[in-house]
Length: 175
Length: 156
Image 1 (tube, rainbow over the protein chains, first blue to last red):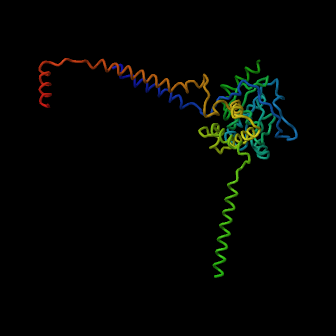
Image 2: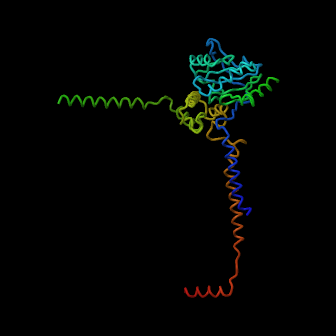
Image 3: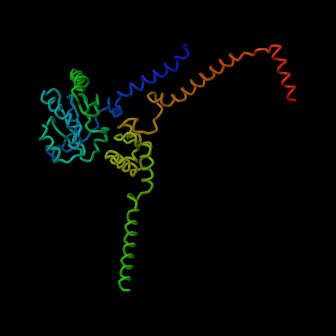
């Protein structure tokens, strides 16, 4: 009688794994960049293409690096949340406008508000490759020493802010 | 007669035209054949991260095109396959490779199937041993023995 239960037990174990699998997000590929220094770059700024932005300018601060584009539908979801976050003054948000046109990007910020202290323009996506960007939006939490502490793939949500990003920033700011 | 000749001429010209355009399309995009071979080989081994179940070679996603361009630039500089793969793994992780390397994280992937085969083999062996024990040799009764010899004799 006990032997007859073995297939049932195996079945339940397999079901357990499959059930867990339903709630995994295959798009969340762990980034090898977490724990590494931010890749350096010099990119023109969206507000003034004559000037350049480099991550070096942010050394000594904990900051968010948000990769976005006006053509990206999911960016529309996270944009108001970023605007709200920037209004609290809790953390500076640097944007990177990824493979976009200047005009549309400026229009986007005018319509939705501008949560970014500065936006760098990565027109051909080369810097995006250095940051391992494969799905916009992506958001990096970068510590005072310029090391990537966390990478969020997909839109920033209230949940991800509350559960992950804000506690992490608080911890990093206290360091 | 004259009309017919004109038609023939037009037909011939159209034919020539189509040959001409065909020849133009067949031109390779890049003149350096060795680089193209390397790009092709690498892009068949690397995953497009946007459409996860396609290789870079199969994918026409924007990022896949960019990465192929990047690989082409590196190949033109004379970088080896390994150096190019390392460059991409440093940015996108092992996930970018279709042939995952053997490391603690992927060990279950590599060893798992053999482990299952071994477990199945052991299970089968134990089961067959158990069955062998169940088959006990029963001696024939006198009545059965006489019946058997009777049947055997009948045959011959």
